[in-house]
Length: 79
Image (cartoon, rainbow, N blue to C red; front, side, top):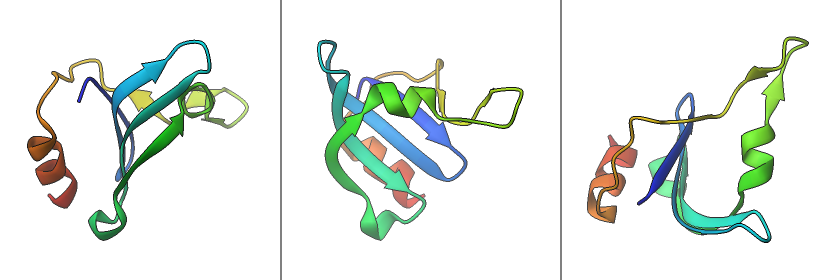
């Protein structure tokens, strides 16, 4: 997994990205490991999710994330 985004208990791990469409492919765990799944993610929309008049970013990219095999991501999701 190349890139990691997070929001509270929700995680998005990106393994492919198409800069022309802004669409990514990866593994999503939205707080429930039993419903975690692979799929397409509109990365431009995910990065633009904001709340409040101050424009505080809700979803943030984990800049300290180091690429790891999926087995480690799956373990992180089931925590």
